[in-house]
Length: 408
Ligand code: SF4
Image (cartoon, rainbow, N blue to C red; front, side):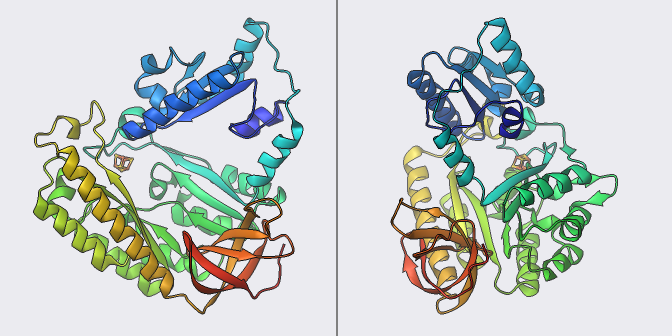
């Protein structure tokens, strides 16, 4: 979206700057996501009462009536591709032309911030509903971006200075194109582009195959797999209508670790799904504990109107939900620390992001296997891949002493 607007002559500014047009690409996966979208739209209106406020995306698709009192334009997923045209038409009809007096400096800064890592959406939609998920109702049609377009987009990002690309989508592993699936696409990307790091946002256990894992012999593929488990209780998984068993999930983890020993496997866990008993939560907790995840994203169950789970009996009490969330979050922190601890004393390539505070010389970045590293440097590390020896825990990650050549 931002690329299209920039090409048409609009000027991109950071999300919290003064702007003529504010566009919220909304998510509706939880009630918290809904609340954040409404909050940001109202905040934008207060920031510049003359601005055009636009809501786009899945929340609009699900409940446009909740957003139309807050936004000037509500654009659902079907019309999202035409957003530039819709906004331009609206501007003409109101006889408004965006003025570009807002500080270009901020716009430039915003652009630089984004230059380290770029997300490229290769697939969209899901038509295999899990019982709790609203996505199939708002994005039912599965579609994949042609491989030639993905390659072109990556080449553009490389030319613009990006070092890492993350392939994203509703279900990336369901990528299908005439020429094949995700495996073939990744092969082509590695062969036809010079991107230095390629990360895949998330996969399902049933998509892990020996052929796919063979691709990781190329070091440009990040040693990081995100596989949403959702629950470590077989009974809960079934009620969630997930399409794998714990045994399949465990096998997928084993194959990944066998192929890539220093890999980080991260996951999503939902706690307090309707009917989750103390025993089922305990099974889930114990499965996660033995799984050695590098990180666990914990989500308390959020009832989405219209889903099967919203109508299930035995919704879990808020107090129990909070205590299970807390316990799982503690496990998440311990799991992350255990994973990071294995790398103390090792030197690893880090893709560094912008300086944390202007003039501080403090930088933070990510290793290929998703460890957040902090370091100090007299020269700018921004958007460079430089190795650092990990010396111990620091804030939300590890401290690193620079050891490598600056490749920026
Ligand atoms: S697989 Fe399940 S959780 Fe993922 S998008 Fe489809 S319905 Fe939602």
